[in-house]
Amino acid sequence: MMYRGNFQVNNNGSPFRSIGGVILMVLMLVGLFMLARFVFRMLYFLSPLMIIATAIIDHRVIVNYAKWLIDLLRRNALVGVGAVLLSIVGFPVLSAGLLLRALFNRKVRQIEQAQRQREADEYVDFEELVDDKPIELPPLEKQNKTKPEEPRYDQFFG
Image 1: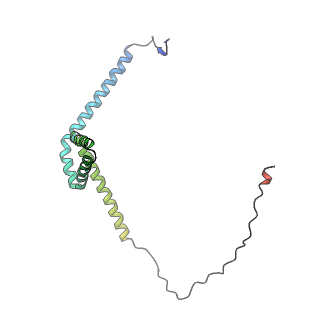
Image 2: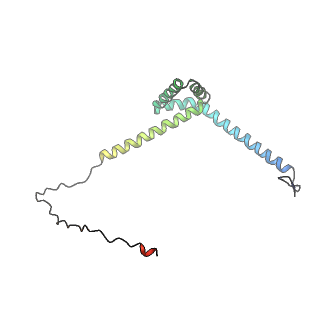
Image 3: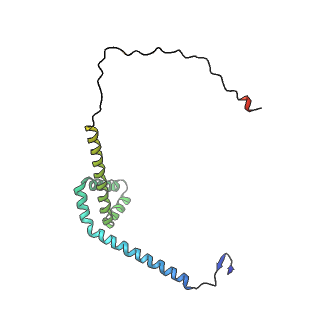
């Protein structure tokens, strides 16, 4: 093993070892790219169905997104135009996101409705007491208002 400056040079290994690692990394990146392309292609073909499903489940999600884009265009035109362009380019991902948001809102509403129903149907058990006689309590004892004995800290220091 030889040292040149701050770098350690290994003359015992094969030069193809590093080339193999680079080739493996390139193959993994190509595989990830192909997987992402397949997922986006499937989202592209399913996006009209996802938008229709979103409109059926909760149309307010689409309306709120459109209102947000319009508000963004009014506040900052450049950022708003960028958001509109990203919405057009990323429509498959946007449609999936809107569908997930609609499903989430629906589930939250179902849970809230079930909770309200449980609270409305729940009866509280109680017993009405009919007694004209007042409750007799024992007399109160007067508390001693003298100060309690203070601890002596002097014994710790000295």
